[in-house]
Length: 237
Image 1: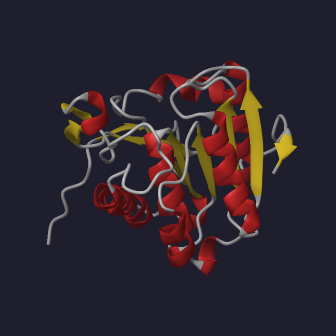
Image 2: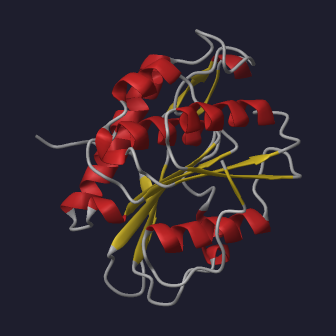
Image 3: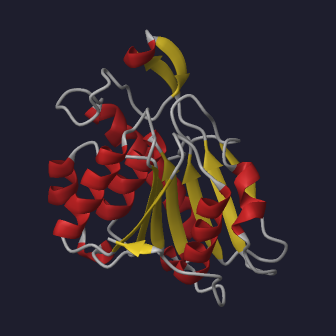
């Protein structure tokens, strides 16, 4: 049976790909959103990393007046932590769709332990659930300016294969879209479940900054064992 995969933008390494990073955009963006970030990660020459940037399906988003835009799930209100504010069924469908891309990378010959999941905002919520419930060990998880949609579902579905998954979580301390408290709550929830979470916040809004990309690059180097990294996690959770 054929599988209809999400559309992706892919950046191939100069040589054969030996690792992969799947990076998920935020609400209303698309697969192009984080392509410009790659050169700023400072990865070593000959790194062998394929970057895969999927685009979410276009759906009506209640929070934005029903406008149709790329979204991983519907958002029904600003209180992102309240029950019913997020579309759990849509989130589950997006997790399954991105999981199919992870499995496609494995089918291409990439060891799952060399596959890292990253996501920003809505994409980060998908990345949280995907990585923590994946039944095969992955390399790492990078979650940016985001939150956890359904703690109970993650706790119930968490798989032992990724109990020691390295996690880097970053957030803007002045974020008006996903307040810092939501990121901190996600971090504290995971730390309470004994996950290894590295945390760093930056004096910025709902965005990324150069210092953050440098830290992400170092995390990727360490997680994928690409060579000596330029630095580590500034503030472990």
